[in-house]
Image (cartoon, rainbow, N blue to C red):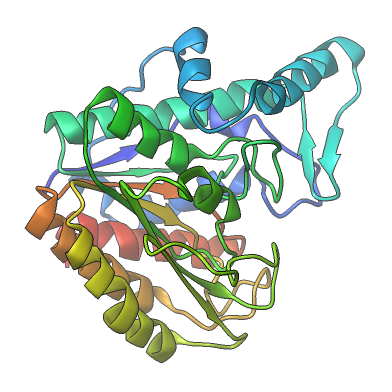
Length: 317
């Protein structure tokens, strides 16, 4: 398999304070683990297209309102003029003067990976980007997230490439409320997820249409619980949907070493999930997978988990 690792240095420019767990060091930790694991030589590292702000805003507008877009753009750009370090969007989501640029690049990377996968230039891709996205709703950023990278990329596949069916798989410890909202009334997209409950953002337990498969799990759930729910709930839905492209909201904060949540997954669990997803992708989607980083805040556990994920995507194990 040809597996591409997509990233951009602009994604490290966004920061929300030295105390904040969603830090630029997350991307560096992943890059360091790629080198130390010696798998970097087996990955492709494509160039990312130059920013085309007008086209990117059009793509973002399929998921986010003009007001939500302007909230990020205007306040980030104003910080560059005012000299103030940060602008608070909510209690734990902040902008700095580079946040608009970083958020655009995160979307740019996700769309570039989607284009390349659908064109057959690569088999699958991992997008090492931040800010993350799956909490960002139509109306507002939230939960460390500015724009919903995965939802925007999936909408791009449907609208621009004429893909008829996609699947979005979210294994972050938190429910992807923004992604669910983006496809709540669009059965072309199957969304399957698990998440710790009760836990932020305290959603995902309401009645949902058949193409939204939410599986809340209690704190301290481990790999046995996750493997059972994937086998019994995710896989039947994925086989019934027959997705032509699979998108992954790849959050690694359900790892047992990550203090952001209270679940107990390890690298082998992420590898096993990736293997199940890859087999579905080979059966229905010509192997086409676009995986985008979401959570994961223990730097060592994050890097190791991404390596485990990539080893399966690249068929190195």
